[in-house]
Length: 88
Image 1 (cartoon, rainbow, N blue to C red):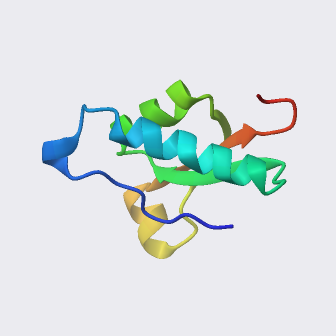
Image 2 (image 1 turned 90 degrees about the vertical axis):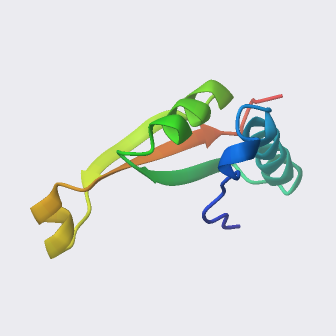
């Protein structure tokens, strides 16, 4: 299962929509028997990273985007993981 580019329009942020979407994704994956949910985010997406951590995701991996631009701009990607085994 893949979820790409989850976002909430700026004028609707702060209402709990992203948190509800994140919990729905976790419930969806859990019901389908997935063992974990893994996602990537850019270093500049501070609000997204904070949301993932509030939802219970843990930093799993941190690396520079493996392209010429990534190395030149030091474009860092953080991978987060939420283990579903044992989670309610």
